[in-house]
Length: 224
Ligand code: E4P
Image (cartoon, rainbow, N blue to C red; front, side, top):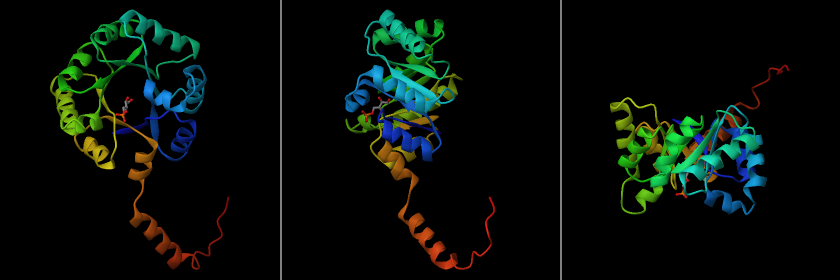
């Protein structure tokens, strides 16, 4: 499983990309809204951090398929985006219609706002490169986010689909742990959860012990 950053906060992104092997960034209108800056200002800053090797998943705001395609084409052209750009398309009826149109136009697709295995399968059949099930939002309505992710992963294997699972919407480290155990290809996670899953108090304590025990004995001069 690879890790993506689910934030549009520039300081958080700089921090995450500096320290961790982050494979890309995902945004949605709520994530952009949290920064209180227009897309035209924030997207170039995100693109600077992501570069052209890592993935950039940007959600479309349009509701009609033709508009979604126009919107995705506009972003691609305006910001000179290449194959690392994915148009995030919600699985509405118009969204399903837009997916093959985007693929025909040579634009990668991430199907988003997925709550069931059937929505994911339909999106995969419509050509989506990634499908994004919302784990925490499922858990919060007394459903089971991990189970839905597992069913989608199983379907992909069973039907030999090229689509991959980009699990999204996390509020706990345990949710991330569990989606990795059921074989999700990727997880997009906020800054706080990435910080938490990367560390452990016993690691900190062990480092203190190493320093206490060895610092006076490491006497070999380190060369440049
Ligand atoms: C991913 O891109 C999703 O839009 C996002 O993870 C949703 O997360 P939330 O449920 O925390 O808003």
